[in-house]
Amino acid sequence: MRLVSWNLQWCRGMDGVVDPRRIARTARELGDPDVCCFQEVAQGFDSLPGSKGEDQVAALLQGFPGFSAHYSCGVDVDRAGRRARFGNLILSRLPVGRVLRHELPWLAEDGVPSMPRTALEAVVEAPWGRVRVTTTHLEYYSAAQRAVQVARLRELNDEATRHARARPSSREDGGPFHPEARPAAGLLTGDFNMTPEDPLVALLGEDMADAWTTAHPGRAHPHTFRIDSADEAPYCCDFVFLTRDLATRLRSVRVDAATRASDHQPVFVELA
View 1 (cartoon, helix red, strand yellow):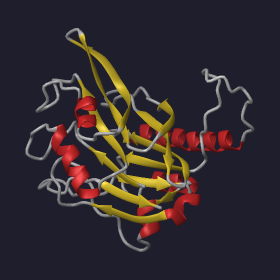
View 2 (cartoon, rainbow, N blue to C red; view 1 turned 90 degrees about the vertical axis):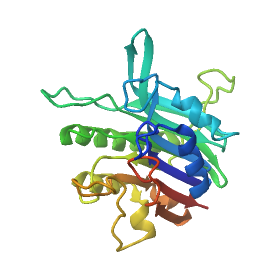
View 3 (cartoon, rainbow, N blue to C red; view 1 turned 60 degrees about the vertical axis):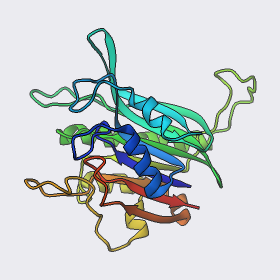
View 4 (cartoon, helix red, strand yellow; view 1 turned 135 degrees about the vertical axis):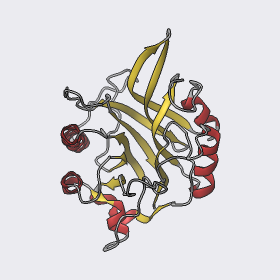
């Protein structure tokens, strides 16, 4: 199973051009992923630089024939009589079972820019069995908000583990109470807006393994943000974590440092 996690900056490249087709083409050429975990995907937001308010969920899906699309928007507001949304997207060519959209805590802080955030979870039928794939995008401006959001992500992982261990209902009628798998095995991907040295990364590491560190022990994380910045130092803030039972399935983790289709670099992971 090949997976990419990528903050798309609403499909805006470093040249200022918003182009969902370029994102799709780049992802396919660089890694031919079976599952795409995209952050900062917009619908109807013509106020974003370079955007005309296009439906980026639909546009990205067109670039991945045969995939299914699953979207979760933290931001859903009115703009001149139409909805404007901003959130996370999972595209999968593998079958997808249960999909969950989790709201993350959103603290009220005086004078601090912030937005509602979500974690999007999809149960994917990998070649070896079912696996949870969750993608998220944590708050940029507030360490306090990131802390409570990380705490919630840890709760969600624990909740999934308990669901996986619980004896399922015998109700098999195909309705909303019909039992659907929520496996303990899972991947957590996204833009966490913190560096590898942040204590919150270590907290997530208590429950799940950092895929890069697992595949490349002793090697520093490659930069995934601000690679071309002349004013600010680049750093890594885009991670893939995996439950420890999946560590033996990890075949490769790499960051593409060449593309400029977004202001972040894509992270590619392969499991078998």
